[in-house]
Image 1 (tube, one colour):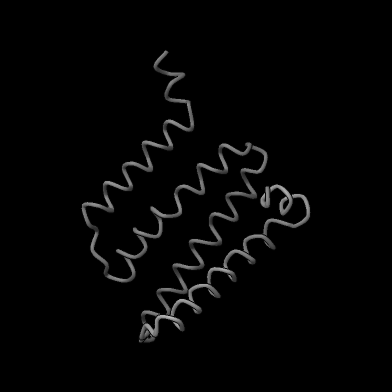
Image 2: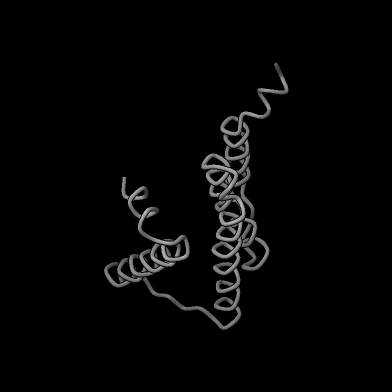
Length: 124
């Protein structure tokens, strides 16, 4: 219901900005409450900024492009964000690609195929 109201009242860029700011505030609060030490070097900060830009700009641009394609296609794009985050983490932050991450990516792709429905049309 909130999304429906927000979409009627706000532009997509305003919604994306609000979501990113809210996430940053919640992460900051979590770090403060749990006293989690955070130490990042310049390379890690640069890589995190690149990942943030890619994970926020590209989906936003795709949503603008796909606005004419309907809600289902826009949802399909949103499901790709965790996959891109994993792949960017592996690429830029030297994270390891675990079996669980690969299994999760496969589940996401399978879900996308089911949601999209085009595969079912070809099978029939």
